Image 1: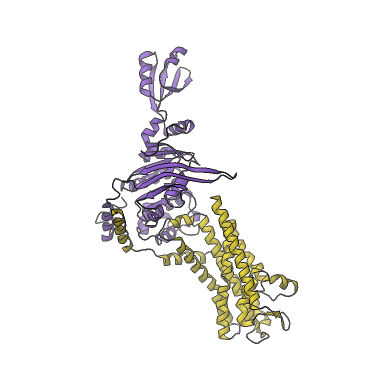
Image 2: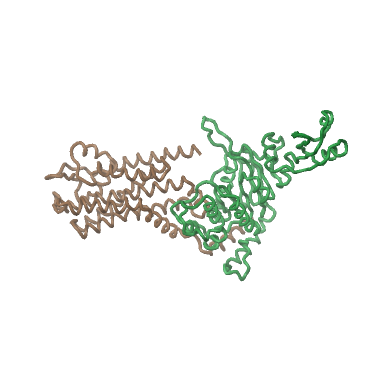
Length: 335
Length: 275
C-alpha cells in the first residue's frame, strides 16, 4: 500500500512513480536473498570474567517480500541478531549482507527501516517533531503527514513523547521505520506495551505494508503474532536457531497434536499405543500428546474401544516449549 | 556488477528528492534545548540576574580597575558570562551523551547522518547556546554600568565563548559517568561552586584564592579577563592580590582539559566493554 500509489493519488508526484519503477526493476534482487546471515557469532562479557555467546553460529537467508517471525524467550539472542542486521553492532565472526552490501550502507541509504525495542525517543519532543527531525536526516523520505497517518498518529501529533503511552510510542517508532520508504522493515518486539486491541490494530496496519512487497522481519515472544502474521518462523534459543521453516511446519515438527478420547484402557492396551509422547488421564477422558496424530487415531479407533475422539494441533507455544526443552538435536539453519 | 550499477541509479533518483537537511535537524534540536526550562534558566536567566545584582546594581561597580582598562562591572561581567557559557556547554554536551546512550543514537544510526555529523551538529548547537548568555550579559552591561574599551570588550567576549569549551568535556564526562539527565543537571549546578572558586562572581582572597587557583573554572575565567586585567587578581579593597602569568592560566586550562578527556576515554572504554 505504501509504495503502490495510484497515479491519481494526491501524494504521488511524478518522482514517486519513477522511484517505484526503478526499485521494482532491480534485477539483482530478484531471486537472491535480500538479507544473508552467515555463521554469525557475537558474545558479551557475562560479568564473571567469562563471555556468553548471545548469538552462536547463526546462518539465515531472507527473500524479498518474505514475512518472518523470529521467536524466542528473553535472552534468546533475537535483539543481538537484529542489531547486527541493522549494523548497530558487528559480528565477532561471520558476515551479514543486506541488499548486497553492508548493513550500515543499507541503513544509510534508507533501504532498511527499523522499529527498535529499547529507548530511541526523546521525551521532550512532540510526536510530530520526532517524525520531522528524523525525516530531516533521511536522504529520501515519505511526507511526514502521510507516515503519521499510516501509523495512526494523527490524533496525538502535538503530544510530548514522554507523555505518550507505551503503545503510542511503539506507533511513533513504527512511523520512524516507515519514513525512508524502506525495502526491508525490521521490528524488534513491535507490540511491547500494547494491549490486545492495540496489537491487532498494529498488525492490521503492518499487513498493508507487508502486502506492498516490503520484506518484513520481526522479533516477538507473542506466539500468536507469529502464527497469525508470519508465513515463516525462526525459533531461537540460547543464541542458536533451533527451528526454521513455514510457521505451520515448525508447529507440527514440535510434537504435532493432542488426541483426546473417552476410554478406560488396560495397562497392556496403553503400552501398545504408537507414537505417544505423553498422556494425561482425567477420569474416563485421556489426552495423548503425539507426533503422529493419524497413526495414533487410527490405532485407537480400530484396535481399541476408545470413542469420542478429538484431534487438536499443538499451539506454537507448545511447539516452542518442546523444541527448547529437548533442544531438538537436528537444528536447522537456512531452508 | 550489475547490482552496483543499479544501487547507484537508485541512489541518484533518491537524492534528487530532497536530500538530507542537517540544518533543519540543528534548528529543531536547538529549539528543543532552548525551550527546556531548566536548561534555559541556568544558562540564560540565572547568569543575567546574577550580573544585574552583582555587576550592575551593587555600588562598587562604577569604580575603575587599578590599571584603568575598565570598571569593576566589566570584571564581574566577564566572570558571570563565563559561568553562563560554561553551563551551556556542560549541559548540552552532557545531554548529548545521555541521548546517545539512551537509544536516540541507535535511532540516528538508522538515518543517512554519519556519526561525525552528529558531533558537528551538537557542537554548533552548544556553541550557539554558549554565545547566548555571553551576548545577553554583554548587551545588558553595555546599556547599564559596564565600561571597557571596545577592542578589549570584543576580545573578552570572544574569549568567554572559547573559555566554555573545556566544559563541554566536563559535561560529556558527567553524561558518560551517570547516564542520566539529572546527573548532567547536577553537574551543571555544581558549576556555581566552581564559579565561586574560579573567582567568577566575587573577588576571592586568602586560602579560598589559593585553593580556587587550582579549580577548573579559574583558568578559563582569568584567560577571558586577560585583555582587561593582564592577569592581575582583583581584590575587594585597594590594589591587586598579585598577577597570574599567562602560562599558569594556560596550564590550568590544559591540565583540566586533559583530566576531563582522559576521564571520558576511560568511561567510554568501560561502556563498550559492558556491551
